[in-house]
Amino acid sequence: MDVTLPEGLDAFLAAAGWPNAVVEPLPGDASFRRYFRIRRGEETAMLMDAPPPNEDPGPFLRAARWLDHNGMRAPRILHAEPERGLVLLEDFGTVRMRDYLDDWPADEEEVYAGAVDALKDLHRLPPGPFLDYGLAEYQREAQLLVDWYVPARNLYVDSRGYAGAWEEVLRPLLPNQRPGVTVLRDYHAENIMLLGNLADQGLLDFQDALIGHPAYDLVSLLQDARRDVSAELEAKMLERYLADHSGKREDFLADYARLGAQRNAKIVGIFVRLWKRDGKPRYLSLIPRVWALLERDLKHPALGPVARWFEANIPADLREALGGEWQV
Image (cartoon, rainbow, N blue to C red; front, side):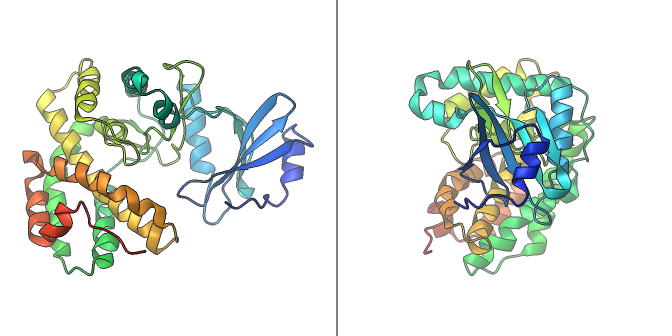
């Protein structure tokens, strides 16, 4: 963990009204961002260090302010100097959904129900001031599997056929995401904080928000790359969401499978990239879970073209080994 304090931090904290505060480094995430807890007596705040040019806090600030303005529980912005990459935020504490459920698994259904209900609240709002989640972006993300996983396995694959299969699979869902909802894009148990009771949940890591399909964040939550979610709980939470959904159930479930497969293919590529490019091999251990979810999504009839591509291009032994073992 990098414990070096950001340059100019004392002046930033003084301008924010937090001079002479105690600064505690915290573990980071898969990005170049770093986090610190700021203490002043009994009060605490969170410092996000997102230094240019690798990071830009502008999208985070825009999304946080929109969410807060619309009644969603994003951390309030206490002070920001985006040109320096420094943002002082409300501190949501230390109780992540993931950690809480590790200690209190009996509360799993109640906690996930709260997370699904928060998505329902978000989806009742008009879409935010974000770009559309279009076919080009879906394709770019799915391509990460071919760009990173495939060469790491020394495979030769039909890249053009891969893109064509995804276009055939994804194009039918595009009309179903109009007018669209705000999609946070990384909504899972490590990015949800519990704020005093199980239903009061705070949002994190939403700087990449787009306007897209309501199934996307639901599949992010229920097909979690970092935590096992049983098929029974997934089905129950899908039913909870669909109870208030006005569209056709079969269409929504087909799109859920499409986006699940697209997202899981993307995540496999990202985890290999984190190893190869960024020197973070710890994410490789998560690939079998993600691959198992991908294989399950590929069984849906809506994924036929992509499923056939995998059958023709990814060796059976790798698929049976859920992506295969890795020598780091």
